[in-house]
Image (cartoon, rainbow, N blue to C red; front, side, top):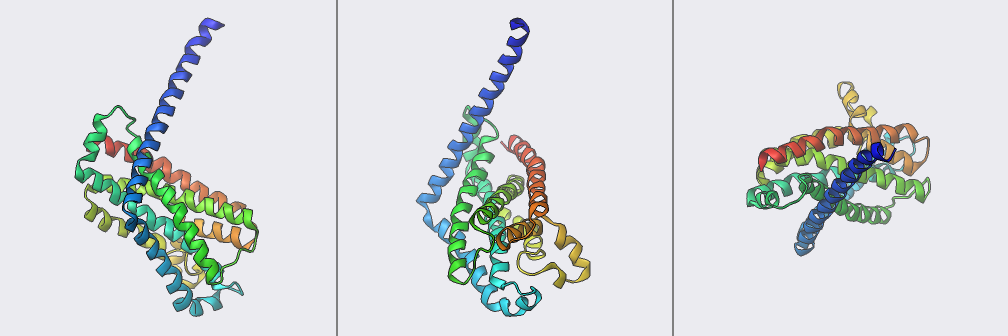
Length: 272
């Protein structure tokens, strides 16, 4: 019994050790990225200005037009969950720019020479961007309350919606990690990211109900990941049966990570 069980136990121990080392390396890289953000605070400032502009613009410029289509729901309560999701998507674009900048500066080669897990660079970048999203979503929540946003289904449901937004932002970071690794310089990364995020954000249920869109667009808008996540968060905030919407949003997150995380690591191995 001992003889046959020992190799299996040893293999599990080695696997656990490798996973623990990879997690430690990823956290070290994440801390490096967060330290850079702390030393250049204007990066955080400008990353919060954009969603703030979206909040005010949609609330006060388009709110009067969209509100009659919502069946009695206040537009600000409809809007803020969509703004959360939009903020996560736009914030994920920084993953592409950050990785492309590291490639252009030669930092990737230095990482490659260190005894660290190959996944650590990508995990560290996406984890740091996840931490930044926490701060931005907190700010957007505060601004939303100032302009009239209210929670209708209780604080626990609202916090569940916030966690769903953060999970989606983390998943989207892996898409943009692939974009950044594929193009290799920050200017091109920013230009290449926009055609990915623009249809997802603006042809979605983030800002307006899907039924107000042209019929040919409704199929895409109703079933793409931004809409599924926005509707799940909105249901958690406003109240109502949310289980189906939440599971659909989580399925999108899991599918995105399952496809783009291995692809990102593969591109990293090839690039450096």
